[in-house]
Image: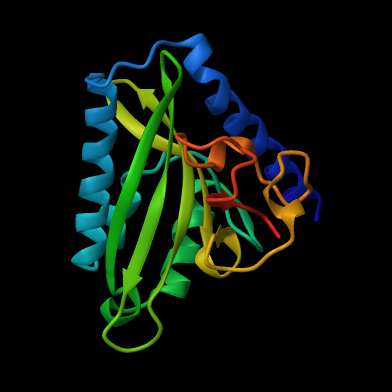
Length: 199
C-alpha cells in the first residue's frame, strides 16, 4: 500500500509538472526530441507485434530505479518489469497486436519529456483491451528511454460524455483525479467532455 501511495504521489507530481511545462519551456511543434521519442515508441510497438519482448523492453531504462505501475501494482526495477511482462504475456497469442495513438509530448526539462496517449491490444482469441498511459522519458547518452510508466485500462481510467456520472468526477479538486495534466490539452480540467479519472 505504501508503494502504491508513493507511486501516485510521484506520478501526480510529474503530471503536474507537465501541466505547467508550457509556462516553463516553449513547445516547438518540430522539436526533434518529440520525433526521437516517437521513433522509440513506434519501434517498441513493432517489437511487441512480432512477439519480441526483449525488443519491446529495449525502450525502458535498464536500471533498478525504473518505475512501472498500474491500477494494482508497482514494480521498481527493470528486472521486475520484464518478469511481469513474461508472466502476463507468455505467447504471441496472449500478446496480440499493440496500437499506440493520440500521443502528446510535453518537455519537462532539457533531458526529460512526458508522453501521454492511448494503447489498444487486439487479440484474435480472448478479450481485446485498451486504455491510457503516462510515460516519462529521459535522454541517456544519445538514446531516449522510458524511466517511468503509468498505464491504466479503460474499464476504470476513462469517463466520456456518453457515460452518466456524478459531477464530482470532473472537478480538479475531486479525489478521483490522478492529475489535471491527464485531461486533453484542448479542454479545461473542469470540462466533462473527456476526463481521465482514478476511481
